[in-house]
Length: 297
Image (tube, one colour):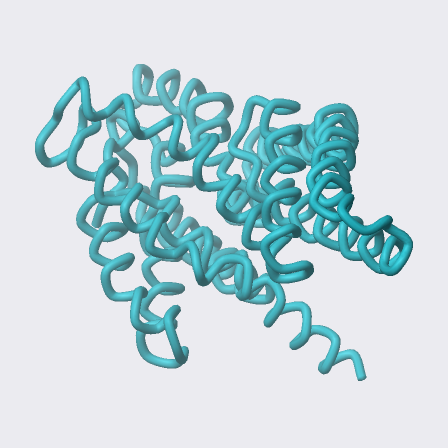
């Protein structure tokens, strides 16, 4: 019974993520090619990167989540609701999109069912458009004031966990907090907000620091993508090789996050892989002199 529910949830989440993998790969290529540390740095084209990550990709996920539940009307209201979540937090809001998209689709589906047969002839289009507009507005406000801050709170908890573990010197355990935070697209917040400053201080004293390798290690993400290449089926398997190239050679870790979101149980794999990698780095006293950019193989 539980296994069936988990499989059903995984299939539902995959249905939100899979149709948008191409958009994530497009973003990954643009990022790998044109950011300051990319293959062909271009200051103008690099301005595309952040808006795509913060606005376009979450809205696409929210639209798809709504559409899965209530077809095109669900997709439209899902996109509206998702934008409220996006503006309610200062981080890429993919988890918020995966909550608000289906929720908005469910709301409009229930409204349509309740209104069926009760709308006067000739007013159908008016009711259809205004119902999406009004309910979409209310859900966007809900997302802005409730879901966005709630996800931001989870973010702060994960950041706090990383800080405590690092300060205690239990570095392999930091993977328990770092990998979930990365999948929430908080890798830069973790790297530059917590790990980076400690690493810089250690590098000044000892000439190198292991801190620069805690989040930047591309191994766990590459392992996830290679597993999809070998064992998965359908569009995820077909797109995984391209994503693996972007991740391994371009150092764009974000490209593997949707593959984990599509199957949340997979989060255990990068956690264990990252912990093992950090343990090896610790045993062999490995360190870098600065934050690696990009974090490629």
